[in-house]
Image 1: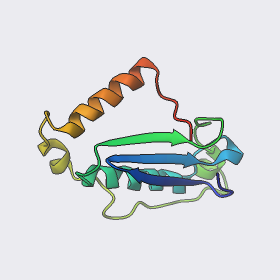
Image 2: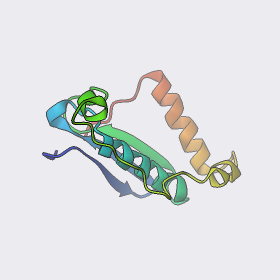
Image 3: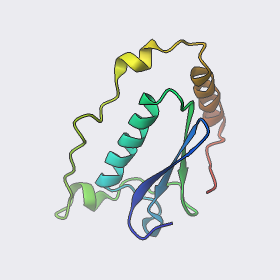
Image 4: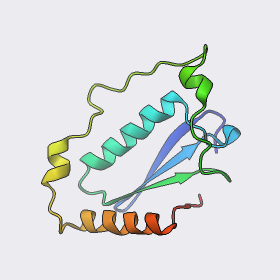
Length: 121
């Protein structure tokens, strides 16, 4: 847990763990965190050695949603994504449906729909 809001990433084998860390505000997202989350997901999308991405939350709360004043209030922080942050659609669609990564995504998606979405850090 940190004092400033952030998205942390850790790699363990073929798993990318993405941690939402803004405990002081119940893990509410600020604009910089949205960009960092997009960057982390882009890293996952572009690295064929990573099969699974797990989104976790630091502390007791998954997320309170958006820290609205940081997005829309008088103290809003405009943040532009990096120019190369957009995922490559061709890489995403060219993978074989039978690849281990696709199977892992399917398994994780099925578990998420079944309600197993809490990750304790």
